[in-house]
Amino acid sequence: MATDNEILFTITKEDLQEEAIHYLGREMDEEEYAKAKKLLEFGVGENLRHTYWGIFFELMDKKQ
Image 1 (tube, rainbow, N blue to C red):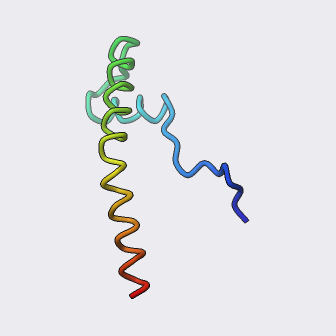
Image 2 (image 1 turned 30 degrees about the horizontal axis):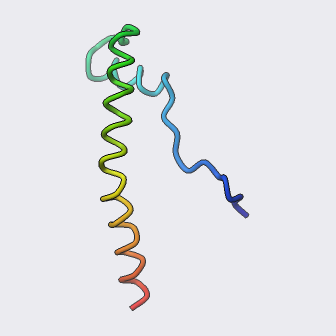
């Protein structure tokens, strides 16, 4: 059974660097990493509300 503080999703620096290799063909330097981290945090935060809406809309729809 899951705990109340179960981690549902993580993105590590290594994950972000692997994506940089895929998209840029190289790892990011520290300045690029700091900017990418900030943009990722913003993007996830902005889109999470829409994601929650979709999840709970789907759950409500299944109950009807």
